[in-house]
Image 1 (cartoon, helix red, strand yellow):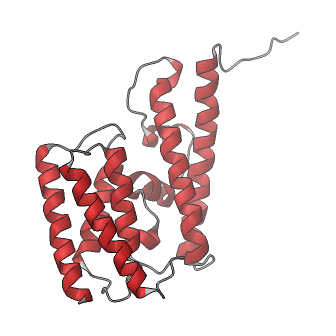
Image 2 (cartoon, rainbow, N blue to C red):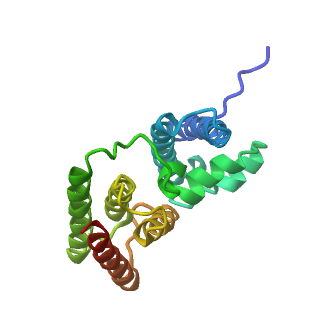
Length: 215
């Protein structure tokens, strides 16, 4: 009688294979979601929360896989491209969204998503608060990626809700660029002194431009 083939021998190895299966599913799902959005088969209002959920799940799984390091311990970088090659995955749109961008297309390109922009005064006040919070946090040396990323994400989302701002508002473009940079770093990494200084400069410039536009 043939013996049962086991893919793992320890709990850590089992967790790694289960996380790999989840990663496979997320990449495939994101690929389908991106293509559906591009083809107009799904509205921005439905696309955006679904994409945000996949991005959050992907980041959690990636950290788990890096920690497991193939079941052998350590904290080596988990190579998503090698993973996709191993399992013959053709998911260029999913890879671009999850790995390279790290934010929904509606947020990255300023498309109208689910956000309501009817309450202009409230939206402006909220955006001002996000600006101040982000700048104050940096000045208080809160410079780890997992501290900075959500602050910039909230700010960028709020900026896209302000109807007075043009699509090409510089603060939106620089905010998206910073989020892409942070997405390529590990959660525990910290911005260096030069990066913090540049980010503060960009935020202060965007804030001044924002106040000029809304007055």
